[in-house]
Amino acid sequence: MNILQPPNWAEPKGYANGTMAEVQVGSRIIFVGGQIGWNAQQEFETDNLAEQVGQTLRNIVDVLKEGGAGPEHITRMTWYVVDKKEYTSQLREIGKQYREVIGRHFPAMTAFEVAALIEDRARVEIEVTAVAPPSA
Image 1 (cartoon, one colour):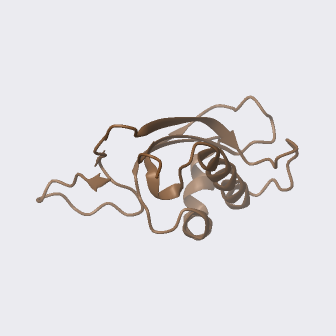
Image 2: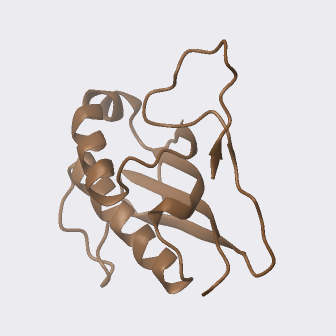
């Protein structure tokens, strides 16, 4: 994946303005539907946003693994949060969770504040697109 960063733009913090993945014969595009901060049994273990982000990201990595991909193959993320102020007040903790699960890989990202998510206890929902290289 190549980061697309116009040379005269300020560096983004924690995301990329654009990404480009070279698609080769045998590459796979993976679309991960919106994941939320519950565990594999669809049970919430916390109502803390940053901790739900960590669980959500682990869920995404689990789905990617099923497609033969890892976090490094993510090209795009869309985040939906129910409270912008809660999100911005926990950016440091969210960043820590992100780096623990995804590492220092920062794809193109967009975030929206939404009125609600389908699951009442969900504080965040994230969907992902990834491009996995050809299988060995």
